[in-house]
Length: 102
Image (tube, rainbow, N blue to C red):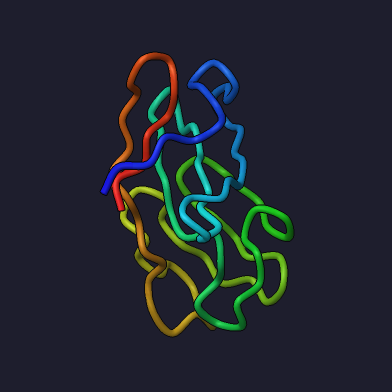
């Protein structure tokens, strides 16, 4: 099911990210070199919010709570202590709004 967000692609410059509510789920959207990526905004280690507590460096998200790292493009764990990947979601732009496929 596709859900439009309240932000458009011009609201996120390269290197920026933001958390939005999509159907009751906190979803992060990151602009990495002009490409948009969407992911579940919660670390799989201790459920810390990635955007609020973490950092984005290129395509790598580092959780601010315990340092787990994820690839924003795939959700794969790059560094422990996270036990599993974060879910990622397809993203597209429709009529000037970012739409997340869930």
